[in-house]
Image (cartoon, rainbow, N blue to C red; front, side, top):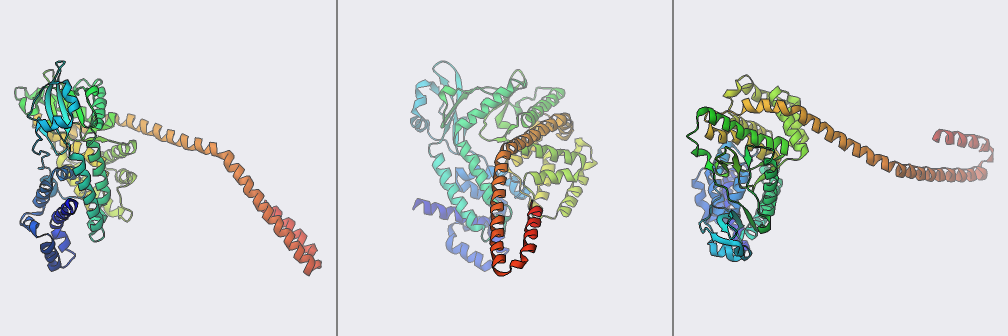
Length: 499
């Protein structure tokens, strides 16, 4: 019964969020009648503007949908800017569970703790974080999954996927923008967040990278105390980015540039990047190093996606339409029935708007939103990892401006991409040559089998040919023996041509 009621509640909210869209191709009276007969308790949603209605719906549906809303806020390729801005207001904050319930659910960590702060540092839909003091004197941060999180998220995702699959039969939007595939990506990301060992592994990867990047520090993971439901890390104290007002303008500018440099290095050199960078997840140590925390959302780029993004970026910088469209095609973002001439014309018009401006006058975040608004008009749907990457790069500028208000990203990004271009191209050539070599190696291994197969096929054809010749000879001898002098030369000539 609980499942049925929950399904009705979710479908009702989705119905009123889609009200205007449904009314555009169904009789308005029918849409209104269905809504008021089946989903009357949620009709007050119609008093809100559509973007606000979507945000309120996600907040009402609970923690899992708040998390989905945060992920949706990256989908600038399918949602208009006004929806994205509203979704960005979603805060992944829910009332914390009592510490007794938390410790009772995960009693195995209690034996190591001397002090446990009952007030959480952060409380989200999936987990909450507490400061604690271990018996050996180490101060730690303990991230603990909410005991009911996995069950709630899996049930809600199941209902949502069934609902979207049903709506896709009637509403073109769900088919055109491949909403079912996007939900599959969301489900994968949420599932990863439900296993804190994944976050621990990424923290370890970034910590190893920080040994090569002197401006970055990542807290240590206490592996012996961590597991699927519990992540224990070193507790780090530092200043928030809004608390560095005592620095000079020159120092703030240098600090902002260092932060951006770190983020760019993780993307283009490590191939992994923090997917949820905001001021609450970045601190500054006394020695000037940046601290990154909360690796619940991490973007990992496949070599093909990273290569396509790099080619796309070079295409934008050099106003090369073939490179841009080729990169989009490489990652499968271009629909089969698209008019490439119109697409290139749109891209050119967009680039002309920015190309002759000084780099210092270009707002990276605004550029990002306008770029993906253009993509939406052509129903170009980008992979989730690429969207998170592009949004991370764009938001980097906003974060850097908290440190240095005059900061602009393009003057820093363009020379950096030019600098690393030879290395990236070399790596890509090596990767493709390796792939080609492996393909030919496999082919060479198969040659004896292919030759043997061809030999057997030839022998089989020979048997068929000579069997037919003997049958034909019997017919000639029986019905017209005089034609034998014509038949034999014809058989010999045919055999020569066949070989």
